[in-house]
Image: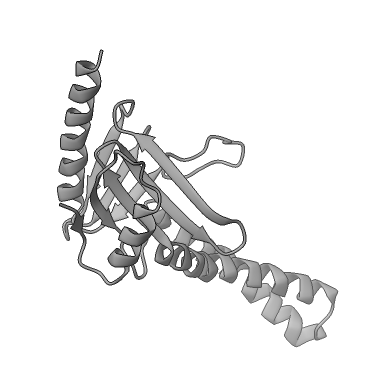
Length: 196
């Protein structure tokens, strides 16, 4: 039996995931990321910093514009302001677009994440349950949260950090899916050891 979280996009997720299954594999759960505006862990630091940066750029630019008009210094300052505001607003628009085209699945053998990308096409991440040793859960008061497959991702990534972030489910009803993954993992390991 397949459990599907209750959104209309979940049926799309189920269809996309069924195309990825191996012949002997059963889909246990399918879903989509939590939709709407979603703040990340690092936003509590990043948003005030970017707002302050925009304010520091905007005030002198406005004063300069009033005194001398639109010269090259004012234009470059305006561009910096547009970049700051674009980072502040644009990243949430891009994140919402990506989450609307991302599908999650749990099978009796693997965890699957499918991303339908605008330019680079479809990307599928598959994580075997038997070899998955690090699994972490973050649950909010509203029962939404994240499940990270591998080492926890840092709150803020530094520029020189080349490590790829660990795959993550960001979903509603996160505890139920976490428990389901754990049960499937135990069963997959039991089956793998019985074949030896």
